[in-house]
Each structure stands twice: as structure tokens, then as C-alpha cells.
Image (cartoon, rainbow, N blue to C red):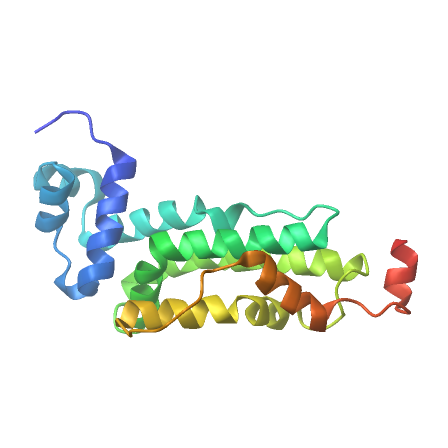
Length: 197
């Protein structure tokens, strides 16, 4: 077994096994075998399985594309970036996040990993809030607006993971954002919008 451990590879493996098997059926032996490390090494570094899973999920979620979107002066470009980052993060880790949300009530030792989701959501909400404050998006609950923007991707992601045979058109973030902006752009006579011009 190698002395050097590819920590990112180990964490990706741990997250993949967790997504496939759930918490109870995930074993450190399977993670170690797939990652090409010694199981004893995992115990020395992380102790219990919960610590390894929490550390792995926290690492991948805090470095995922959805965690890195920031507001600029272009509302449409920012929303396209948000949608694209969500889609990429969901493609990579959506199964693990879904498993985490289902498993956490039965396994409270996974709370640390759930906490890693909050900054991502708050960051995305801040992008919406910034554009509301600048008069580019209609006022209202920014979390609800974020969910409205991402809802089609969430639904298609759930169907895909469930194995449903759906006829889904090619994902086009610009079309999704254009449709969202049709109903959520700030009105022309909005005091915020007038002040932003």
C-alpha cells in the first residue's frame, strides 16, 4: 500500500460509496479497498466511520462549484453561473447530498456534513439578494427565488437518480435563466431599479 495518500481521491471515494450504499452499509473496508489504501490507515487518521464521512462530505461540498459563485454587475450572467454551478455540483455530488438528507435524521453523527450545505445555500441566496438590492431582481424572499430558479434541475436530478426514463431536453442554462427573469426581473418603475440606473 502506498505511503502517500491522495486525500482528494480518498474523499471522492468515500462520498461515492456513501452515495451508493447509505451510511449503515458503507464500510471503511470498502472505502479503503476502492481508494487503494490500508483500512488501518483510515482508522489512524479519522477514527470512526462517521468522522471520515463527515470530513469527506465537508471537503467536497465546500469546494464544489456551487460554493464558489459570486455576484457581479450582470444579473443574467450570474444566474447562468449559479445554475451551471448547481448542475455541475449536483452531477458530481447530488447522490451523496440526497443520501445525506435522508440519512441524517437516523444518524445524527452526520450533522457536521449537513452543516457544510448551509454556506453553499447562503452564498447562492446572497447572489440573489445582491441583485435585488441593485434593483435587477424583484423583491421577495431570496431563498424562494433561488428554489424557483433551481427547481427544474432539482426535479430532473431526482428523476434521474430514481432511474426514471424521462425524455428531457438538453440542459440549457441560458433558457432556464431567461424564463426565470421573465417573471422575476424588477419592474421598470421600481425605486431600486431607478436608483441602480
